Length: 148
Image (tube, rainbow, N blue to C red):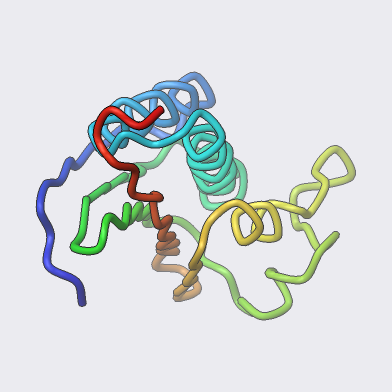
């Protein structure tokens, strides 16, 4: 486990209106690491996918709690964790396969694939009936001060 240099923790109801807030709050927090616009977009996209998964799949018939933690770790790594206490995933490996979804035909089944492609690390832990925790890491390239 990396040493944390700074962190935030947010908790919000699993309403779709909170997805944008979570995405922007994480981007604002990450901005202190001086990411490129592309790095920031990658982070926002991955957070959107993780939070949307919690809203749509963890609590399909109710409003539950979603917790977002972001921390800046040694080595200029941003770590973002999205946690819910919803229904959980019975087969994480199957859920991580592209095109697999439990959300009906309007869902693409690409959430974990997108998270994996935009971040440098992705861990998914889940207990059926108890919830899911998604942890993602993104290394932010170091740039010399004044060298833009």
